[in-house]
Length: 444
Ligand SMILES: *Cc1c(COP(=O)(O)O)cnc(C)c1O
Image (cartoon, rainbow, N blue to C red):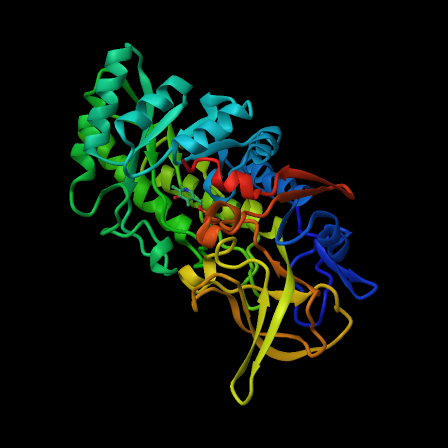
Protein backbone atom coordinates (compact mmCIF):
# COMPACT_ATOMS: atom_id res chain seq x y z
CA UNK A 1 0.00 0.00 0.00
CA UNK A 2 1.55 3.32 -1.02
CA UNK A 3 0.93 6.54 0.81
CA UNK A 4 -1.33 8.90 -1.11
CA UNK A 5 0.55 11.78 -2.67
CA UNK A 6 1.20 14.69 -0.39
CA UNK A 7 -0.44 18.00 -1.27
CA UNK A 8 1.38 21.09 -0.10
CA UNK A 9 -0.47 23.07 2.58
CA UNK A 10 1.99 25.86 2.09
CA UNK A 11 5.20 25.78 0.13
CA UNK A 12 7.19 24.72 3.17
CA UNK A 13 4.71 22.35 4.74
CA UNK A 14 4.13 19.31 2.58
CA UNK A 15 4.21 17.03 5.57
CA UNK A 16 1.36 14.65 5.35
CA UNK A 17 -1.58 13.82 3.09
CA UNK A 18 -4.16 14.58 5.79
CA UNK A 19 -3.22 18.28 5.67
CA UNK A 20 -4.51 20.77 3.12
CA UNK A 21 -6.02 24.22 3.02
CA UNK A 22 -9.14 25.92 1.78
CA UNK A 23 -10.38 29.51 1.97
CA UNK A 24 -7.27 30.56 3.85
CA UNK A 25 -7.82 27.99 6.58
CA UNK A 26 -5.85 24.89 7.43
CA UNK A 27 -7.76 21.66 7.08
CA UNK A 28 -6.96 18.47 8.88
CA UNK A 29 -8.43 15.17 7.74
CA UNK A 30 -10.63 17.23 5.43
CA UNK A 31 -12.07 19.41 8.22
CA UNK A 32 -11.57 23.13 8.83
CA UNK A 33 -9.19 23.52 11.77
CA UNK A 34 -10.51 26.98 12.67
CA UNK A 35 -14.09 25.64 12.82
CA UNK A 36 -12.96 22.74 15.01
CA UNK A 37 -11.18 25.16 17.35
CA UNK A 38 -14.39 27.22 17.57
CA UNK A 39 -16.55 24.14 18.20
CA UNK A 40 -14.39 22.41 20.80
CA UNK A 41 -12.27 25.25 22.21
CA UNK A 42 -8.48 25.36 22.53
CA UNK A 43 -6.00 23.96 23.37
CA UNK A 44 -7.30 20.98 21.47
CA UNK A 45 -5.80 17.65 20.50
CA UNK A 46 -7.18 16.39 17.20
CA UNK A 47 -6.73 12.78 16.11
CA UNK A 48 -7.46 11.56 12.60
CA UNK A 49 -9.02 8.14 13.13
CA UNK A 50 -8.84 7.27 9.45
CA UNK A 51 -5.11 7.91 9.51
CA UNK A 52 -4.64 5.79 12.65
CA UNK A 53 -6.39 2.92 10.92
CA UNK A 54 -4.41 3.47 7.74
CA UNK A 55 -1.15 3.35 9.70
CA UNK A 56 -2.26 0.17 11.49
CA UNK A 57 -2.97 -1.44 8.14
CA UNK A 58 0.44 -0.51 6.76
CA UNK A 59 1.83 -2.78 9.45
CA UNK A 60 -0.76 -5.54 9.53
CA UNK A 61 -0.77 -6.02 5.75
CA UNK A 62 3.02 -6.04 5.58
CA UNK A 63 3.11 -8.54 8.44
CA UNK A 64 0.68 -10.83 6.66
CA UNK A 65 2.81 -10.70 3.55
CA UNK A 66 6.21 -11.04 5.17
CA UNK A 67 6.24 -12.96 8.43
CA UNK A 68 5.13 -16.42 9.62
CA UNK A 69 1.54 -16.96 10.71
CA UNK A 70 0.97 -15.91 14.29
CA UNK A 71 3.27 -12.89 13.94
CA UNK A 72 1.64 -9.80 15.38
CA UNK A 73 1.80 -6.03 15.53
CA UNK A 74 1.45 -4.63 19.06
CA UNK A 75 0.52 -0.99 19.46
CA UNK A 76 2.84 0.63 22.01
CA UNK A 77 0.13 2.32 24.01
CA UNK A 78 2.48 4.69 25.78
CA UNK A 79 2.49 6.81 22.59
CA UNK A 80 -1.18 7.68 23.25
CA UNK A 81 -3.19 5.69 25.76
CA UNK A 82 -6.91 6.23 26.18
CA UNK A 83 -9.79 3.86 25.80
CA UNK A 84 -10.91 4.80 22.31
CA UNK A 85 -7.35 4.21 21.04
CA UNK A 86 -7.50 0.70 22.51
CA UNK A 87 -10.81 0.06 20.74
CA UNK A 88 -9.49 1.29 17.40
CA UNK A 89 -6.29 -0.76 17.42
CA UNK A 90 -8.27 -3.78 18.61
CA UNK A 91 -10.61 -3.42 15.63
CA UNK A 92 -7.54 -3.27 13.39
CA UNK A 93 -6.32 -6.58 14.80
CA UNK A 94 -3.30 -5.31 16.73
CA UNK A 95 -2.18 -6.47 20.15
CA UNK A 96 -1.11 -4.03 22.83
CA UNK A 97 2.12 -3.19 24.58
CA UNK A 98 1.59 -1.67 28.02
CA UNK A 99 3.98 -0.41 30.68
CA UNK A 100 1.88 0.23 33.78
CA UNK A 101 -1.18 -0.75 35.75
CA UNK A 102 -2.75 2.44 34.38
CA UNK A 103 -2.34 1.31 30.79
CA UNK A 104 -3.60 -2.17 31.71
CA UNK A 105 -6.68 -0.66 33.36
CA UNK A 106 -7.28 1.57 30.34
CA UNK A 107 -7.15 -1.44 28.01
CA UNK A 108 -9.15 -3.70 30.30
CA UNK A 109 -11.99 -1.26 30.78
CA UNK A 110 -12.09 -0.70 27.01
CA UNK A 111 -12.73 -4.42 26.56
CA UNK A 112 -9.33 -5.18 25.09
CA UNK A 113 -8.63 -8.94 25.05
CA UNK A 114 -5.98 -9.38 27.73
CA UNK A 115 -4.30 -12.36 26.09
CA UNK A 116 -3.03 -9.93 23.44
CA UNK A 117 -1.45 -7.60 26.01
CA UNK A 118 2.33 -7.59 26.53
CA UNK A 119 3.54 -5.96 29.70
CA UNK A 120 6.88 -4.11 29.64
CA UNK A 121 8.82 -2.05 32.13
CA UNK A 122 12.11 -2.15 33.97
CA UNK A 123 10.63 -2.04 37.46
CA UNK A 124 7.31 -3.75 37.93
CA UNK A 125 6.40 -3.70 41.60
CA UNK A 126 4.87 -6.69 43.39
CA UNK A 127 1.55 -4.81 43.30
CA UNK A 128 1.90 -4.29 39.52
CA UNK A 129 2.62 -7.97 38.99
CA UNK A 130 -0.38 -9.05 41.07
CA UNK A 131 -2.65 -6.50 39.36
CA UNK A 132 -1.55 -7.64 35.89
CA UNK A 133 -2.07 -11.32 36.74
CA UNK A 134 -5.51 -10.52 38.17
CA UNK A 135 -6.29 -8.75 34.92
CA UNK A 136 -5.11 -11.76 32.92
CA UNK A 137 -2.31 -10.02 31.02
CA UNK A 138 -1.13 -12.43 28.32
CA UNK A 139 2.59 -11.94 28.50
CA UNK A 140 5.14 -10.29 30.75
CA UNK A 141 8.27 -8.94 29.09
CA UNK A 142 10.76 -9.71 31.85
CA UNK A 143 13.42 -7.08 32.28
CA UNK A 144 15.81 -8.84 34.68
CA UNK A 145 16.50 -11.54 37.26
CA UNK A 146 14.66 -9.93 40.15
CA UNK A 147 11.47 -9.57 38.16
CA UNK A 148 11.83 -13.14 36.93
CA UNK A 149 11.92 -14.47 40.47
CA UNK A 150 9.08 -12.22 41.62
CA UNK A 151 6.95 -13.46 38.71
CA UNK A 152 7.75 -17.08 39.45
CA UNK A 153 6.76 -16.58 43.08
CA UNK A 154 3.45 -14.93 42.18
CA UNK A 155 2.62 -17.49 39.47
CA UNK A 156 3.45 -20.30 41.90
CA UNK A 157 1.19 -18.78 44.55
CA UNK A 158 -1.64 -18.74 42.02
CA UNK A 159 -0.70 -22.11 40.61
CA UNK A 160 -0.65 -20.80 37.01
CA UNK A 161 1.93 -20.94 34.25
CA UNK A 162 2.59 -17.37 33.09
CA UNK A 163 3.81 -16.67 29.55
CA UNK A 164 6.87 -14.42 29.39
CA UNK A 165 9.32 -12.94 26.91
CA UNK A 166 12.83 -12.12 28.09
CA UNK A 167 14.10 -8.65 27.32
CA UNK A 168 17.59 -8.87 25.89
CA UNK A 169 19.85 -5.88 25.19
CA UNK A 170 21.43 -6.41 21.79
CA UNK A 171 24.13 -3.76 22.16
CA UNK A 172 23.10 -1.57 19.24
CA UNK A 173 23.32 2.19 19.20
CA UNK A 174 20.56 3.54 16.95
CA UNK A 175 22.12 7.02 16.75
CA UNK A 176 19.04 8.82 17.99
CA UNK A 177 18.64 11.07 20.98
CA UNK A 178 20.06 9.50 24.19
CA UNK A 179 16.79 9.61 26.11
CA UNK A 180 15.03 7.47 23.51
CA UNK A 181 17.85 5.02 22.86
CA UNK A 182 17.48 1.78 24.82
CA UNK A 183 19.39 -0.99 23.05
CA UNK A 184 22.91 0.03 24.00
CA UNK A 185 24.91 -2.15 26.36
CA UNK A 186 24.62 0.34 29.24
CA UNK A 187 20.82 0.76 28.93
CA UNK A 188 18.62 0.53 32.03
CA UNK A 189 16.43 -1.94 30.14
CA UNK A 190 16.97 -5.63 29.63
CA UNK A 191 19.87 -8.04 30.10
CA UNK A 192 22.94 -7.62 27.95
CA UNK A 193 24.34 -10.17 25.52
CA UNK A 194 27.71 -8.44 25.39
CA UNK A 195 28.43 -8.76 29.13
CA UNK A 196 27.62 -12.47 29.13
CA UNK A 197 24.62 -11.93 31.43
CA UNK A 198 21.90 -12.79 28.92
CA UNK A 199 22.68 -16.49 28.62
CA UNK A 200 22.46 -17.38 32.33
CA UNK A 201 19.31 -15.21 32.47
CA UNK A 202 17.71 -17.44 29.87
CA UNK A 203 18.88 -20.54 31.71
CA UNK A 204 17.37 -19.29 34.93
CA UNK A 205 14.08 -18.43 33.23
CA UNK A 206 13.81 -21.88 31.66
CA UNK A 207 14.27 -23.45 35.07
CA UNK A 208 11.20 -21.71 36.53
CA UNK A 209 8.33 -24.19 36.68
CA UNK A 210 5.56 -21.56 36.61
CA UNK A 211 6.90 -19.50 33.72
CA UNK A 212 6.52 -20.36 30.08
CA UNK A 213 9.30 -18.68 28.09
CA UNK A 214 7.78 -17.88 24.69
CA UNK A 215 10.81 -16.03 23.35
CA UNK A 216 12.89 -12.90 23.38
CA UNK A 217 12.29 -9.21 23.15
CA UNK A 218 14.60 -6.37 22.21
CA UNK A 219 13.98 -2.70 21.57
CA UNK A 220 16.72 -0.51 20.28
CA UNK A 221 15.25 2.97 20.33
CA UNK A 222 12.67 5.40 19.17
CA UNK A 223 12.42 7.79 16.20
CA UNK A 224 14.81 5.51 14.31
CA UNK A 225 15.72 6.52 10.76
CA UNK A 226 19.09 4.91 10.59
CA UNK A 227 18.87 2.42 7.76
CA UNK A 228 19.36 -1.03 9.19
CA UNK A 229 18.64 -0.91 12.92
CA UNK A 230 16.00 -3.65 12.78
CA UNK A 231 18.09 -5.78 10.45
CA UNK A 232 20.98 -5.53 12.88
CA UNK A 233 18.71 -6.41 15.77
CA UNK A 234 17.56 -9.47 13.83
CA UNK A 235 21.14 -10.54 13.19
CA UNK A 236 22.27 -10.10 16.78
CA UNK A 237 19.15 -11.78 18.20
CA UNK A 238 19.25 -14.72 15.78
CA UNK A 239 22.94 -15.30 16.60
CA UNK A 240 21.96 -15.24 20.28
CA UNK A 241 19.13 -17.70 19.61
CA UNK A 242 21.60 -20.02 17.90
CA UNK A 243 23.94 -19.88 20.91
CA UNK A 244 21.11 -20.59 23.31
CA UNK A 245 19.87 -23.48 21.20
CA UNK A 246 23.33 -25.01 21.08
CA UNK A 247 23.91 -24.63 24.80
CA UNK A 248 20.53 -25.64 26.20
CA UNK A 249 18.38 -26.87 23.36
CA UNK A 250 15.81 -24.07 23.75
CA UNK A 251 14.16 -22.54 20.67
CA UNK A 252 12.00 -19.43 21.06
CA UNK A 253 8.64 -19.25 19.35
CA UNK A 254 8.44 -15.47 19.32
CA UNK A 255 10.97 -12.76 18.55
CA UNK A 256 9.80 -9.27 19.48
CA UNK A 257 11.80 -6.55 17.74
CA UNK A 258 10.32 -3.62 19.66
CA UNK A 259 9.18 -0.34 18.17
CA UNK A 260 10.70 2.74 16.84
CA UNK A 261 10.30 3.67 13.17
CA UNK A 262 10.68 7.43 12.90
CA UNK A 263 8.07 9.84 11.55
CA UNK A 264 8.34 13.15 9.76
CA UNK A 265 7.98 16.10 12.08
CA UNK A 266 9.56 18.58 9.69
CA UNK A 267 10.14 18.62 5.97
CA UNK A 268 13.80 17.71 6.31
CA UNK A 269 13.02 14.42 8.10
CA UNK A 270 13.15 11.50 5.68
CA UNK A 271 9.93 9.65 4.93
CA UNK A 272 9.96 6.00 5.93
CA UNK A 273 8.15 3.53 3.71
CA UNK A 274 7.01 1.07 6.35
CA UNK A 275 5.94 -1.87 4.13
CA UNK A 276 9.25 -1.75 2.30
CA UNK A 277 11.14 -1.58 5.61
CA UNK A 278 9.27 -4.56 6.97
CA UNK A 279 9.92 -6.53 3.80
CA UNK A 280 13.61 -5.85 4.20
CA UNK A 281 13.59 -6.97 7.84
CA UNK A 282 11.82 -10.16 6.75
CA UNK A 283 14.37 -10.77 4.02
CA UNK A 284 17.20 -10.50 6.56
CA UNK A 285 15.35 -12.75 9.00
CA UNK A 286 14.72 -15.54 6.49
CA UNK A 287 18.29 -15.37 5.16
CA UNK A 288 19.90 -15.52 8.56
CA UNK A 289 17.57 -18.26 9.78
CA UNK A 290 18.69 -20.33 6.81
CA UNK A 291 22.35 -19.56 7.39
CA UNK A 292 22.17 -20.45 11.08
CA UNK A 293 19.92 -23.43 10.47
CA UNK A 294 17.15 -22.06 12.70
CA UNK A 295 13.38 -22.04 12.22
CA UNK A 296 11.91 -18.58 11.55
CA UNK A 297 10.22 -17.39 14.75
CA UNK A 298 6.93 -15.52 14.87
CA UNK A 299 7.78 -11.84 14.74
CA UNK A 300 6.33 -9.12 16.93
CA UNK A 301 6.85 -5.39 16.51
CA UNK A 302 5.65 -2.62 18.78
CA UNK A 303 5.12 0.59 16.82
CA UNK A 304 3.77 3.51 18.82
CA UNK A 305 4.83 6.78 17.27
CA UNK A 306 4.44 5.66 13.66
CA UNK A 307 0.81 4.61 14.34
CA UNK A 308 -0.37 7.87 15.89
CA UNK A 309 2.08 10.74 15.36
CA UNK A 310 0.89 11.99 11.97
CA UNK A 311 -2.71 11.30 13.00
CA UNK A 312 -2.44 14.09 15.56
CA UNK A 313 -2.50 17.86 15.57
CA UNK A 314 -2.76 20.38 18.38
CA UNK A 315 -4.67 23.64 17.99
CA UNK A 316 -4.04 26.68 20.17
CA UNK A 317 -5.31 30.23 20.26
CA UNK A 318 -2.77 33.03 19.97
CA UNK A 319 -2.65 35.43 22.92
CA UNK A 320 0.14 37.95 23.54
CA UNK A 321 2.63 38.76 20.85
CA UNK A 322 5.71 40.33 22.36
CA UNK A 323 8.37 42.03 20.33
CA UNK A 324 11.71 42.77 22.01
CA UNK A 325 12.98 45.36 19.61
CA UNK A 326 16.24 44.32 18.02
CA UNK A 327 16.08 40.86 19.58
CA UNK A 328 13.13 38.61 18.95
CA UNK A 329 9.41 38.01 18.97
CA UNK A 330 7.42 35.69 21.17
CA UNK A 331 4.03 34.42 20.13
CA UNK A 332 2.26 33.02 23.21
CA UNK A 333 -0.47 30.40 22.98
CA UNK A 334 -3.05 29.13 25.46
CA UNK A 335 -1.26 25.83 26.18
CA UNK A 336 2.39 24.92 26.56
CA UNK A 337 4.75 22.33 27.99
CA UNK A 338 1.86 20.98 30.05
CA UNK A 339 0.27 19.60 26.87
CA UNK A 340 3.45 19.22 24.80
CA UNK A 341 6.69 18.90 26.76
CA UNK A 342 8.66 17.42 23.89
CA UNK A 343 10.66 20.48 22.86
CA UNK A 344 11.50 21.22 26.50
CA UNK A 345 12.41 17.58 27.07
CA UNK A 346 14.33 16.63 23.94
CA UNK A 347 14.47 19.64 21.67
CA UNK A 348 11.94 18.01 19.33
CA UNK A 349 11.17 19.75 16.08
CA UNK A 350 7.66 20.53 14.87
CA UNK A 351 6.00 22.11 11.89
CA UNK A 352 3.73 24.96 12.98
CA UNK A 353 1.41 27.22 11.05
CA UNK A 354 -1.23 29.89 11.49
CA UNK A 355 -4.35 27.90 10.67
CA UNK A 356 -6.38 31.11 10.30
CA UNK A 357 -4.10 32.69 7.67
CA UNK A 358 -2.92 29.96 5.37
CA UNK A 359 -2.99 32.21 2.30
CA UNK A 360 -0.61 34.75 3.76
CA UNK A 361 3.16 34.42 3.44
CA UNK A 362 4.92 33.29 6.61
CA UNK A 363 7.70 35.83 7.08
CA UNK A 364 7.65 36.72 10.76
CA UNK A 365 10.37 34.93 12.68
CA UNK A 366 9.29 34.10 16.24
CA UNK A 367 9.34 31.61 19.11
CA UNK A 368 6.06 29.84 19.78
CA UNK A 369 5.82 29.69 23.56
CA UNK A 370 3.37 28.42 26.13
CA UNK A 371 1.96 30.07 29.24
CA UNK A 372 3.64 28.00 31.93
CA UNK A 373 5.95 29.72 34.38
CA UNK A 374 9.19 28.44 32.86
CA UNK A 375 11.42 30.16 30.34
CA UNK A 376 11.89 26.67 28.91
CA UNK A 377 8.18 26.46 28.10
CA UNK A 378 8.76 26.60 24.37
CA UNK A 379 6.67 24.67 21.87
CA UNK A 380 9.00 25.55 19.01
CA UNK A 381 11.66 28.24 18.65
CA UNK A 382 12.51 30.13 15.50
CA UNK A 383 9.46 29.45 13.34
CA UNK A 384 7.85 31.56 10.63
CA UNK A 385 4.29 32.85 10.93
CA UNK A 386 2.51 35.54 8.91
CA UNK A 387 3.32 39.17 9.88
CA UNK A 388 -0.40 39.68 10.35
CA UNK A 389 -0.67 37.04 13.09
CA UNK A 390 -2.74 38.45 15.92
CA UNK A 391 -4.49 37.62 19.16
CA UNK A 392 -7.35 35.19 18.52
CA UNK A 393 -5.75 33.42 15.56
CA UNK A 394 -5.61 29.63 15.66
CA UNK A 395 -2.13 28.13 15.52
CA UNK A 396 -1.65 24.49 14.57
CA UNK A 397 1.24 22.30 15.66
CA UNK A 398 1.40 19.30 13.34
CA UNK A 399 2.29 15.67 14.05
CA UNK A 400 1.47 15.75 17.77
CA UNK A 401 -0.37 12.41 17.94
CA UNK A 402 2.45 10.62 19.77
CA UNK A 403 3.80 11.45 23.22
CA UNK A 404 1.80 14.66 23.65
CA UNK A 405 -1.48 13.62 25.26
CA UNK A 406 0.39 10.82 27.03
CA UNK A 407 3.06 13.15 28.40
CA UNK A 408 0.67 15.93 29.39
CA UNK A 409 0.93 17.10 32.98
CA UNK A 410 -0.97 19.29 35.38
CA UNK A 411 1.93 21.69 35.78
CA UNK A 412 0.75 25.14 36.88
CA UNK A 413 -2.62 23.45 37.26
CA UNK A 414 -3.17 23.81 33.57
CA UNK A 415 -6.15 21.78 32.39
CA UNK A 416 -5.45 18.90 30.01
CA UNK A 417 -6.99 19.43 26.57
CA UNK A 418 -9.62 17.07 25.18
CA UNK A 419 -8.94 14.58 22.40
CA UNK A 420 -11.32 15.00 19.48
CA UNK A 421 -11.37 12.25 16.87
CA UNK A 422 -11.98 12.99 13.21
CA UNK A 423 -13.56 10.22 11.24
CA UNK A 424 -14.93 10.26 7.71
CA UNK A 425 -15.79 13.95 7.82
CA UNK A 426 -17.33 13.84 11.31
CA UNK A 427 -15.84 14.58 14.73
CA UNK A 428 -16.43 13.23 18.23
CA UNK A 429 -14.91 13.59 21.68
CA UNK A 430 -12.71 10.62 22.69
CA UNK A 431 -11.35 12.20 25.88
CA UNK A 432 -13.15 15.11 27.53
CA UNK A 433 -11.50 18.36 28.45
CA UNK A 434 -10.34 18.36 32.04
CA UNK A 435 -12.32 20.75 34.22
CA UNK A 436 -11.31 22.83 37.22
CA UNK A 437 -13.27 20.43 39.42
CA UNK A 438 -11.48 17.41 37.91
CA UNK A 439 -8.24 19.07 38.86
CA UNK A 440 -9.09 19.38 42.55
CA UNK A 441 -10.98 16.10 42.74
CA UNK A 442 -8.30 14.29 44.75
CA UNK A 443 -7.31 17.24 46.95
CA UNK A 444 -8.42 16.94 50.60
C1 LIG B 1 8.67 3.20 23.47
C2 LIG B 1 8.65 1.78 23.13
C3 LIG B 1 8.01 1.35 21.95
C4 LIG B 1 7.40 2.30 20.96
O1 LIG B 1 8.35 3.11 20.35
P1 LIG B 1 7.88 4.11 19.19
O2 LIG B 1 9.11 4.88 18.88
O3 LIG B 1 6.80 4.95 19.72
O4 LIG B 1 7.44 3.27 18.05
C5 LIG B 1 7.95 -0.01 21.72
N1 LIG B 1 8.49 -0.90 22.58
C6 LIG B 1 9.11 -0.52 23.71
C7 LIG B 1 9.66 -1.55 24.61
C8 LIG B 1 9.21 0.82 24.01
O5 LIG B 1 9.84 1.20 25.13
